[in-house]
Image 1: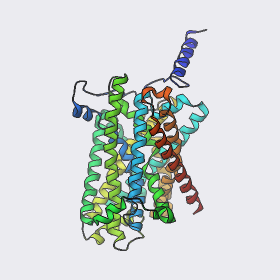
Image 2 (image 1 turned 180 degrees about the horizontal axis):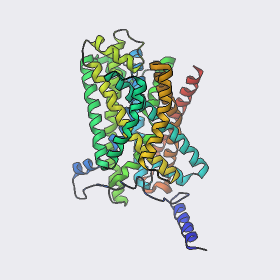
Image 3 (image 1 turned 180 degrees about the vertical axis):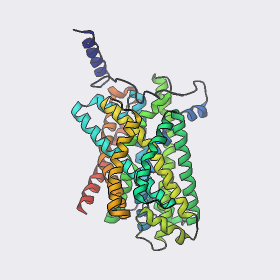
Image 4 (image 1 turned 120 degrees about the horizontal axis):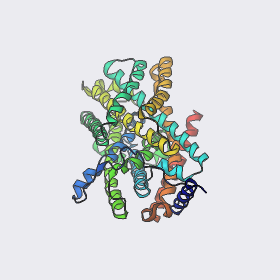
Length: 454
């Protein structure tokens, strides 16, 4: 038997002892793996600052342009009633992202690598294809959002706006080669812009406080009203993004902590704080979009507003504030650009993890951008604005379809004692996460059936 054959047998035995079919071949995002220093003797706040960043990058997926249409439609049609759905969706997201970061830290595998090392090659390949479809759908929403923002701010035709978004690949490549902390800082700056914009929008829209607080409590009408239920499921589908689970399980490994039991426990603790706080920012932004729509459109009788451009056109005249529409469009542009940065990373992680190969970042980015730009360009050319709105809706339906294919493996892996060791999900956590996974599966199947029925 050759030395190579012996090594393969040894790796297979080692992998089986750890609960895997295959041994891990390389680190996730190897060029930035363990590249951000964590002070060994620093206090709580210094360590938290060192771990801060991945959560913000993940939170971007929860406030991308795909969320805007569902939040606007919910607020304009039903006032503050669907705020509870945004809150519940956000709690689901906090739980699922916790599982993702725990998987990455405990097993030193991202979710894509875990699927590759656990499932037979045929199943792993199918999961990769489904994930690539989801990333392309998310990229489609980013293209449309950026093109709409350029159209609203500068009057650039949508077809040209779609083509212009292709050139952001050059900007992203520059950022990637400057270090991971720079990427995190740029994302944080864009999030601050979006927060500031919607803070202003809430102030000038003067929402009613008591109905707003009442909206945070779930109402049975959400279940019994078919139109309300449809939008509620759309909000859930647009909030919890499948590619974020792959992304988070990878980028938490960029921190340089001790890869032993104590180091991993510390990393999980601080990464969880980072993730939870960041997703609360995402909750504020999603809630703010719905609140502004409710306070501006629902109360003034414009309950038919369901599209981003309609909201932009009506904000100034309804509120009587000149800057409201412009600030709304600036937030949309920041949201689209932020999603572009994290979408690129997610695509790289998924391809490397599932296929165990690596393309150059610019090749990977051009492939996903082309997949998104071609349908967006054709639809805008043939059908204009309403076609774009329908394409945006389709992208969210596709994301909903893919969600369970990421959530179920994540729950399975983190509940496996052999794989996770001392970091395995405890029994109460297992019960909760399987209930959440079941709810997501049932609601997304309902959304899919209802979408094709109409």
